[in-house]
Length: 374
Image (cartoon, rainbow, N blue to C red):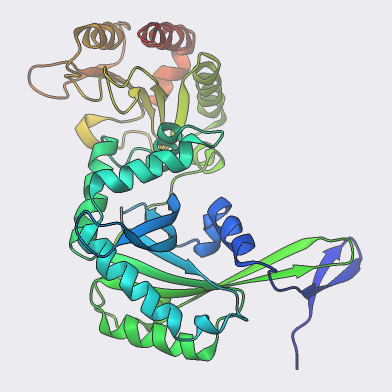
């Protein structure tokens, strides 16, 4: 019996019918805008659409990959999109994908991938750096570290191959399962994205990932899955309402002063943009963690501020960060190394007690950092 899909509106059910995508480009565009359709098990960063693939060193591009993504573990993810009615989805697309994987891993360079990402996102409403920093959170100390890891995974042929269509045929499912069982460092998936529309043109999308369960237990797939905390989750994990109110106040002050509040896997950070020649990535001026007393890297805990990277190789910036670390006569000092810079950390109760001074200090240090751009 055929499946029936309904949208519930109040006490009524509105039937919606499956509607295939008219053009493959429609499905490609949808995936570029909403990479979560690839599955919620990972976080996805679009490097570029239509990534050229050469078949010789310094050669001209012979093929074009529909999408190149990377996940939070810097694993390159090659995506090829077809409509279910396209006969290539059964076997020919597999040969295409293997061509892209074999030659891309051989001839793509770190600089080439990074430049492709910058070109893709500089034309959007968000600059490439902002897109990247929002994606990375606190997981990488610099964006150079992230792109180096992408290149390392690519050279080692640790990658993911994903076939996307609005209907995945059984023949392709069997090939995906076979390849997943045989390939050691390459994960192979198929993603079926179905589109449903009702009488009032309401659109419903259903995404199904095929292939995760096909791999044997010892398959060498990435072991870590990082999920960035949402603001709601962060606030809920704080000990009480007093601290939640101060957290919201400090985040608001930071944003209104021109800084960014970045979500990490364990907490939040406040970052200020400075010219790239002074520091890349943006300068982190404070960190906020929800579990009281828990110690993170470099001794950070609760609410910490100061120099995350003690030597920025720029005296003006170092001087600002030293003043910031010494601004408050309360809290406990943190030495990020034995010689340069440092920081300070406050307990949750101390930030409640000294919230006015903290808010004023945030405004001051963010303003000083912003003046470096003048």
